[in-house]
Image 1 (cartoon, rainbow, N blue to C red):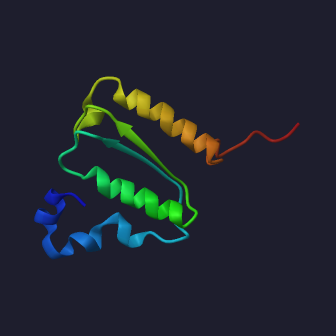
Image 2 (tube, rainbow, N blue to C red):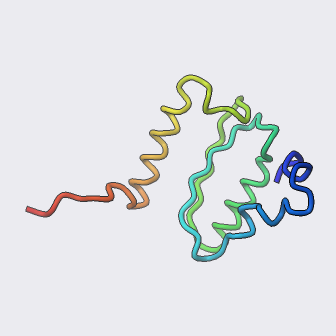
Length: 103
């Protein structure tokens, strides 16, 4: 968690952290984080990925260099992340969710 979450949620911050719900049944994670984000700490996301990987789960971390918390508002970033999302979902066998029947 970043300091802003700790300040905002006080003693409940750890309870609402995604880290608290991770176990060896967790799904596959694709994370995006802008390295200039002052709202969420990059270390927290890296910790989640490390924890998932230690349990044999999939976690891919994508750093968005030079941008801040609202990185998705930067022209072109949504399109770039969408390509990465679709690639991830295809590699994980999640897409296509409906396949044409075999001839």
